[in-house]
Length: 424
Ligand code: SF4
Image 1 (cartoon, rainbow, N blue to C red):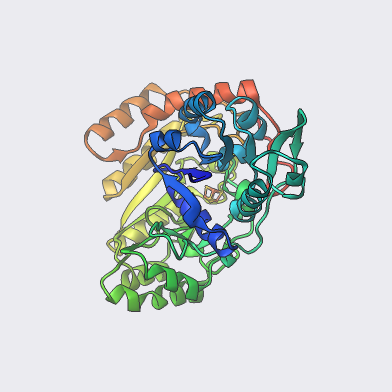
Image 2 (image 1 turned 90 degrees about the vertical axis):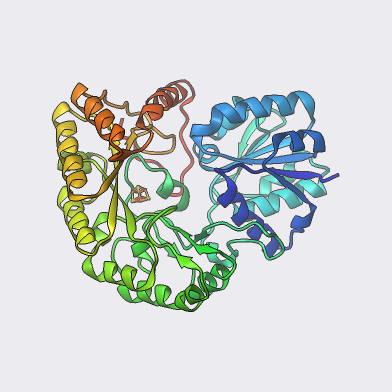
């Protein structure tokens, strides 16, 4: 029997692939783990521990699985991911997990599994020495502190002995702190980068080369500025393996680029060294007042300029917008509509999302603004013509569920930076 099971899903695949690499590099035998995307296999296996990792948007499905596991097995259930870091009490008390991990997971997961294995898979006082855990010990809620990993690059992106691979996380952390985003509060405000030789080494195992980073053109910099030399050095170093037949996708799924990093110099690098001819950038609004309100730290002019540059270089702009932002007026929405129209007319693509208040962000308790009739009609018309992508319709319902969750179970979130600024 495999004593420890990992409940993989499409959404947590990348996270677990990296954690497997981290576990193995610290001496854990990952060959002993049951790793499956099939829930019935987990039920059948009757493992002593089951590991989950999920986002807040997934908690309603996760809750159902936990209920079944609690009824049919005696497994100790461990949760990690953005939701557990933001709402550890909710994770334990409402979702039904036995242990929540909080912060960056590479070290905490290794020490946790090792300690549990040594203690017959029971929650004991030995867990108190592991940073990054929340659990109940003798009926008392216990939080051992936020787990930080100063150097995430000491862990490989994937395990040597596993065939599972995923896009490589090349940079971690983000200095911008947009009020709707969980990233800086879980990964820190300081951007850290995986060294080029490691990226090259592990890219050789990929068919298409894809990377995870909050801002692909900020590679090698503290995050807020461009380091063109370092960026070019990385792209250049990947060329020999690109020539072996792998395609290099940079600044597009599953990563993106901030608009003010789109410049002739960066686009020239992309044309020279990468295979994608589209780039994803975050705009989020067409109103400068909203940029200030959400702490985006760029302007509509930055976005306009980025789109112009991309078109000049024959690169398709894919521009993200969030509609229904807190305190967004009809006038703000009108400005976003005008801006989206301009992008579409120029030949770009728009991806529209509805505002979702995420726990662990400064906007967690902010309410979305209703969409104006004009906005609803515009989005519907443009989507029907194929000019706008995105799932804002589904997200309206999800956003309501998130608001109810936060109203009912609000808790102060542990965060990388200590106290989280609260705006609403
Ligand atoms: S939305 Fe992007 S730029 Fe803003 S804080 Fe999150 S990762 Fe950073």
